[in-house]
Image 1 (cartoon, rainbow, N blue to C red):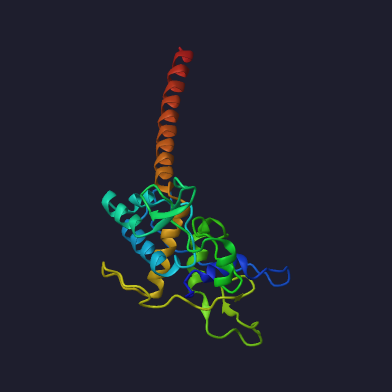
Image 2 (cartoon, rainbow, N blue to C red):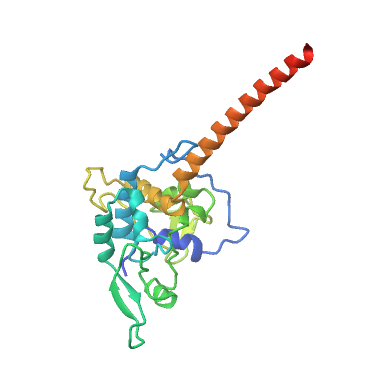
Length: 254
């Protein structure tokens, strides 16, 4: 099984336990994201590029079990494009009239199929580690998208002087304990973007992180819109209440 960009993320949660004497508070720089803030929205082109990275680099090891193909409509794909995309995958169905399970092309209503049939096979293919599902990965760790983005770019070829890495471990300056079981997997030109966006390490990491945050927060834009409406309603109600107060006090002064 080929190594992937998100093998690093797998190690973050499943491979290296953190003990009290090695865990440290690591400062993660804040990044500018289109979805930040009350008026934040997702950049659909960026989400499509991030989905491309997930498909070409991450999906071989990591599942996306809470996302159905029809959810990709939010990324700007048409109904026909989603049908074509779903048909590229097979999902298990059944039982049939003979009581047997069978495989069929996926439909828009199906959820993204996992890369492995079960956990045992997943661990066997990944040296004992179980690659985590990525549906909620940006919410599963303090720092959210900032942490995932910098973790993917936080590898260095050599550890600081005096630090000894365990066998098979790599140095990552944003990973608690600084030792991670998977080496660097993200690099320039790992994918080809048809929209002309340069496939630099930074762009690849940012695009796929944005996509994963959408997977974890698919209702973010709707929630932001609701928040704006609530604020506007509150302001209007406050203004009306203030005008009513002025009117009542004006009567009392007469």
